[in-house]
Length: 170
Image (tube, rainbow, N blue to C red; front, top):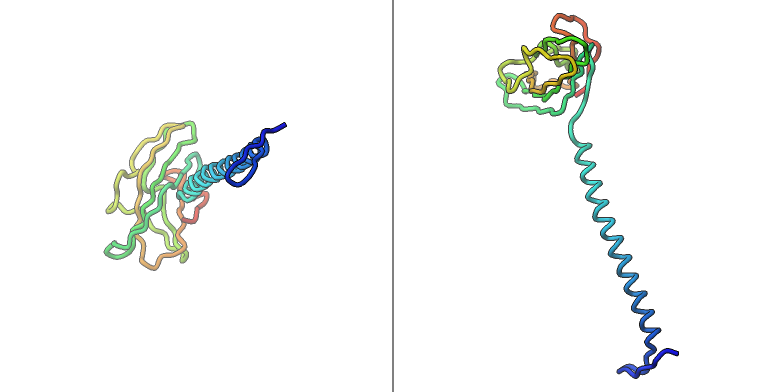
């Protein structure tokens, strides 16, 4: 039999009060557990959405794979805007190959083709020999008219190639 105690609000049963306390404590613990779960789930979702927002496109051309990891557009050019791409190039072939800015061109929606500009280069991808299985990263810039829209990156398989296997929309 449970003990009865006379409190300020009348008699109390310790077992009943203990059960009520345990139930209240369990509810509080469950609420805290849900809050902690939602907090960590929310952080995970925001971290994955940040990863998804990173600019990333790839294009294969012959034995070369090009990964565009950053895209910048700057309207401060004298005659047009400067498009700067951070590109990683990987040689998937069995022989070393020469890479250079001549391998990449921009094409706009009107069919105009733009060569890379040497005026805006920084850590440029040019004149390097790339061994099989190796990667190299750098920047390449293009100066295009202010009205250029629908830009696509074209990649050639070698400096001596006159055909390209494909293009990607930037």
